[in-house]
Amino acid sequence: MKAHETAYGQRLLRGQAPSYERLQARLAGDGSEPHDQPRALHCGWGRLLIGHTYADPAKLAEDLLGECRGERDIALYVAAPQQVLAHAPQQLFLDPSDTLRLWFTDYRPAQRVFRGFRVRRAQNPSDWQAINTLYQARGMLPVDPELLTPRHLGGPVYWLAEDEDSGAIIGSVMGLNHAKAFDDPEHGSSLWCLAVDPHCTRPGVGEVLVRHLIEHFMSRGLAYLDLSVLHDNRQAKRLYEKLGFRNLPTFAVKRKNVINERLFLGPGPQADLNPYARIIVDEALRRGIEVQVCDAAAGLFTLSLGGRRVRCRESLSDLTSAVTMTLCQDKRLTQHALHNAGLLVPAQQLAGNADDNLAFLEDHGAVVVKPVDGEQGQGVAVNLTTIEDVTRAVEHARQFDSRVLLESFHAGHDLRIVVIGYEVVAAAIRHPAQVMGDGTHSIRALIDAQSRRRQAATGGESKIPVDGETERTLAAAGFGYEDVLPAGRQLAVRRTANLHTGGTLEDVTARLHPTLADAAIRAARALEIPVVGLDFMVKDASEPDYVIIEANERAGLANHEPQPTAERFIDLLFPHSRPLA
Image (tube, rainbow, N blue to C red; front, side, top):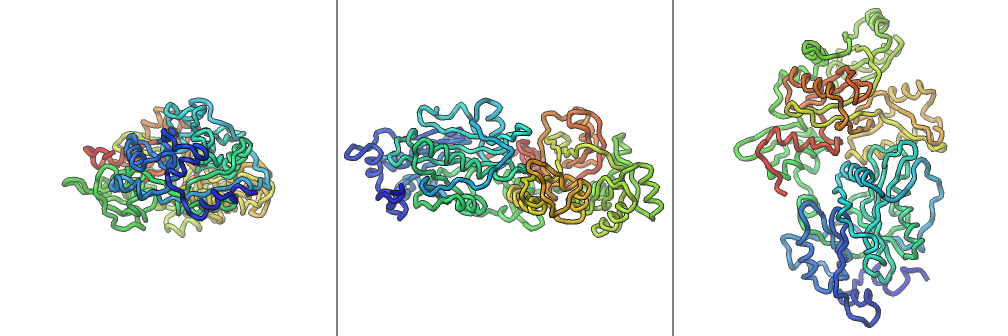
């Protein structure tokens, strides 16, 4: 007989939730009295309060109200949530997430092999640091390992997915053995905090972590795995449905706080904003600053506090003058201003006739073609070495601006430095879009899959174009769209590293060379711009050699985790504001 065919399992699936007292009796054994001690386990980011170990709804409400600042407690398996909410209706709310369950009798092992990474337990401080970097990139609360309930007392275990080539942590998941945690008579388990690096190119990391947890708990003689997923997280739900999870009619209750505000208030004024505007609006709301969204599609909003009012378009605000905007938008003027300030910039000239273009190419060996006024990498072609490629690239760039620039090409890493208030706040190496071969799928299919992952990780902002520039990049590496990339082979499919064309960011703030930081601040002062994203070409972020290739007056502040870009932006606009919690 399958586990979910027991009387108790059938009642759960039908939604016939037993009372607190009867659940208690099940936990203690038939005919015994309810437990005296409710069970609460600390997971490093907050506590899991096991609802059916609480005989008194008032006690459960009291414990939820005891949530520590900066943490997130969750009361799960709450049989009668209305009884708990009645004790503090202004401070508690019913979590809108769905609970799913996989009975292990329904589980089927994977039919394919996932390569390139291994799964192991978190073991040392560097592992916890890697987990927290990953969680911050996903907008999740960090883990404090000092707060964890010990495993021998039923505490959770964290597993990591580690890239076999780089050693980087590319995924993490937390598991809880219910038999150890609260003497669960049904011998269950649960999954929490599944996260995959948004820059990861290896397919199947999330699926492997879930399967690993399932098979680990199966080997311990447990019967099922539960998990909680936001009701609108369609991508995650597709994975869980594929693995055999089914809806479970049970409830979770949380305390209202700034971390989960959107879950109990519903969509706010920032709901339709892109990630670059939303990160700023979220920080403003956290500080009690009034937000008026003027045009969500354009990223336009107004912030007000006291008598001060500032209009913004993403990170572009009233503090940036029209003249400064012109200096940044016209790449010729940018180059002149930075050159006059003694900073290193590439050679540059307007594209002209074929003879002029050929002469510039012969002088520099390789060139970059870009529109004079463009953004998000549109119309940019890099490392062109033949006049035929230059001519085609110039024609393509004219779709975005009739004026097209030729620049000397400088090999190296694409480094973005964000300067706010003439201080360096973040620095990140921008890597071009890449795919990882599996020996089965075509490069076109790999690009489509990687694009879906990048879109999910960036709120739809990042996608790899299937266009002539991608085709040219593939051809230079000896491939076409329909070729099958060997398993484990990593291939760059773009030459520019813009986030909008599938690029990824690697935070290098901690190892930024002082010369590069100084050059970025000098460039911001030369342009007289309070908030700017400066694009450098460098050998390495820890070395002093550089060339500044662009200045962006509307720098994207999202995706620079763990650096406090939005916080420093609001500090600049409203220096006396303080977070509410």
